[in-house]
Length: 167
Length: 167
Image (cartoon, rainbow over all chains, first blue to last red; front, side):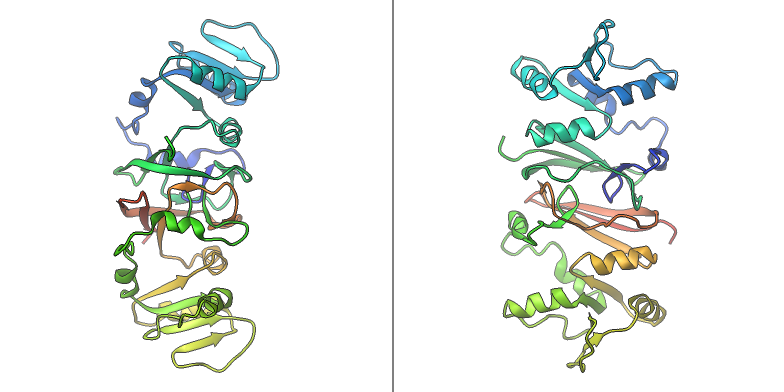
């Protein structure tokens, strides 16, 4: 997010992320993804990736594409129309690795409202966008956190890794 | 601010700051204040300090209490009813040390809208408040920043020090 808490401009632009682009630097993404075995992604984010001509990644994991329109599964990709909260509770009760909530703030905020987020890895980009789409929406419950670590990168990105404080 | 960008709850409570209280730890405040020779503070913050039975600090500096009601100065404390933006432009054009904007987000946001903030020292408290009074209001201009340094403290507070990128 930007220092003022936005993940995109009002026009949905992610242009500001180019401020921290650096050849060979993925800000820990590859390592993180290896710790994951289930991915949730909103239909809009999924379709944005496809429309840009890419395959959606994570084909080695259980991928849940959250949508209102039922469709048959494609490989490991399930189009999921049921209750998100129940899905996460079920996944957390099964043995496995981390569950990754990819892209967009709506799913994350729904999970935060239901106190289902155990860890946050927040990358703060060195810019004030001034306005835009907020990572944290209003009206969530209070949650105390523990700062596990922070890492400052050359391009001015700082990554903050928290877990819930009562774990 | 909290990780989700609030400086107080909706009820104006600062209770969450107690999470990072630690005997003998002032998170760099004393050192910072020594780099300052002019202070701006809103009338509400000023009166809150007085109402708690304290003297307002910074009596060794030029203090501008921003208010709509003119009053005679008391020592170095000026009750300032004129244009905030012009005050800051004048102060910046004079030789001197840093100008500190104390308490409350309204003054800071007015200065940000007019592109008059050169440095930000943001302390992120390890909590999601869920809702409250935002540090950064909507509808400011975009401003690129440079991360000068970051410091992680034992209680989980992380302090981020930025300056505008075009300096």
